[in-house]
Amino acid sequence: MSTTIKSEAMLCSELFHKGRFRVPWHQRYYDWDRRHVRDLLHDIAGAMEEGRECYFLGAVMLVRIEEGLWEINDGQQRMITLSIICAVLCRHFALQSPGSQYEGLALQLLFDLHRRSAWKLDDANHYTPRITPPQNDEMHFKQVICGNTIGTNGKFTVAWREVSGFFSGMSTELCEKYLTYVLQRLEIACLWVPASIDSNAVFETLNYRGKTLGALDLIRNHLYSYFNSEGEAERRKKIHEHLEDIRPVFPNAIKAEEYMRCQLQCIFGFLRKDQFYRDARRAILTQGDKRQVESQTRADYAFTLTKQITSREQLELFRTITAPVPSPDLIQPFKVDSRTTNSKRNISVYLKELNGYKVAQPLVFALLTRYLKETDLRHRKRIAKVINKNLRLLSAFVLRTAFVAPKFEPSRFESAFANFSKEIMTVDDLSDAGFARFLHECDHAAYGVLDDSRFRKTMAESRMTGKRKIKLFLLGINTEVQADFQILNQEMCTIEHILPKSPDHWESWDGFLDIDKGAWVHRLGNLTLMGPADNKPGPEFNGNFGKKVESYRNSGLKITRKITEFSGWNPESVQHRQNEMAKVAVRVWKFA
Image (cartoon, rainbow, N blue to C red):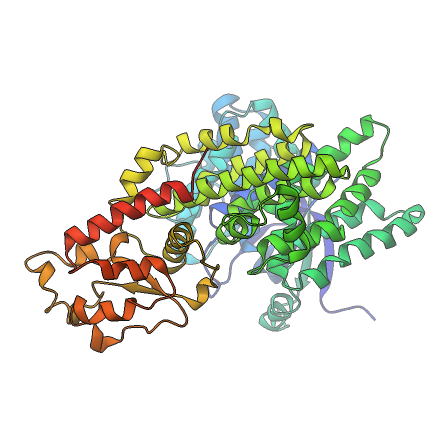
């Protein structure tokens, strides 16, 4: 018995040549943004460069309306984007080689034209488009595929510009090769639904079942793909076991993907977050090809790589450096080897300070991987000292930047940090990695925070918001001035504004009469911490400095107790305290 709904795989070009297609009026308009378009362009280019027999564009659902006319119930975004790609290429051919066969081939995909005549873009306004989008998009789409001037706004314009930028500067020969691949290698799965069937019910089944694969699952599947032959059954089983080792350590999928990206960046260099799978896949293929030159197979390389990225030691290391409280199994031996057991600032502090800045993860991971992999005990002690210094420098750079910048921007450093992590993993002598020089180069592209006088001057004038950043700063200052201070759980501390934040309490603060109090509330000199056991001042104590200061007298933190040395509180008091804090900050986060 035959099925009512038919399925068929075919070339995209073959599908387009079946006639015309329209998008139902009730469907959303064209909605792909720049990232979606870029992904498709690069995916096709990658498949072409790798010489893959086909690139699978996914599935579409089509409902027959009449002979030669179908409704696109699922798949309009891909079909329209593919049309825009062909339109940009068509314009390129029309400008560079008018009347060429490639101009005609692109037009035949865009318009309902038979294959045995010569067609020109100049006449496109008279042709019938193969795809008709919803009414509000119809005219704009036709302008795009006819090669006419388009507007400055809208999704079609965004897509057109992204595609145009991709092909800009590309030779005509390479454009021809790209279009040929689109015509001869792009495949699509078609679900043909009769008009008598409720197409919406079929659509819901397609789109509301299952779970979208994340980058980690896609990378896993790519690694599995090397072991499909019958002779690879044993290694296929091993690969699966290795990859499954990630789940117990990182049951949270986001954390697992974070680990994988950090690990792979230490191997390959920078991998864009929004293109993680594609960049990782390309890197794995490239390295696999290099190994073939060295008489290894791609499968050999994939097997070795999988063992490396799923080793228990590496998994536990990442869990340690990202945990709120790092495991002592790594921390204590490292302190002993680096001779920092009794130091106020050591690996425990550096990991805590860097924990909120994911951009630094590859550098920390690469440095500590080098420590763990060193088997010679004498060399291990030497390398621990080098790594400890580098962690101190990294923490100083990241924290100084975070304190100075209005907003810490990972994008300023992400590529450089990832690429240098790869260098750390491969350099023969870690002391030759030039860590300080590298951070100075990063600083030149940022805020100049490694200049002590400049950093001190900036901190002496700074206002600061953001609870985590404020706590890191104040705890760092307190650790420097209080010899017997034990590191507190910063979550147990509360931020105290000496001049209260609320204007409701400003009336009795005589030291700030006729002064813009709002300009002083968030100054560093006006901020302090109250420990978990401190007698925190409540609303009734916010009336004036005299009432609040008694709450500070018995605080467990010296920076808070020292406020009682001031007889009153005014802008001069705030500035004096902030000047002193700025001097201490240079010592705490020293870069030397």
